[in-house]
Length: 116
Image (cartoon, one colour):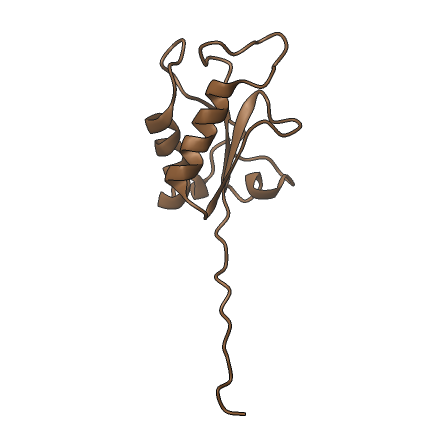
C-alpha cells in the first residue's frame, strides 16, 4: 500500500536510487513491495520500502541464497543514499529483498564549557 508519506522527496529518493543503481534485471523492472504495513517499524510510518530481487540475473528463486549481485546493489544504494538511510540485504529474513528506510541520524554535539 502506498501512503502520502511515500511521496515526500526523501522517501521517493529511495525508489529513484534503486532504479539508478539496479543491476541487469530479467524484465527491466524494479519490483517494490511492502511500502506500508501496520506495526512494522519504518514501514508503518511510510518511511520504508522493500525492493524485491527475484528478477535479478542469477538470483536463485528456489533456495533464496545470498547473491553477490544483489549485495552490490544494496551497497551501491547505501553509498548514494548516505547515512540518513538504512539499506539491508543478507540479514535473516532479508535474502529475497532489499529493505530500505529513511532513518535520519541525529548529530551529536559536544559543548565544552570553557569557563571553569
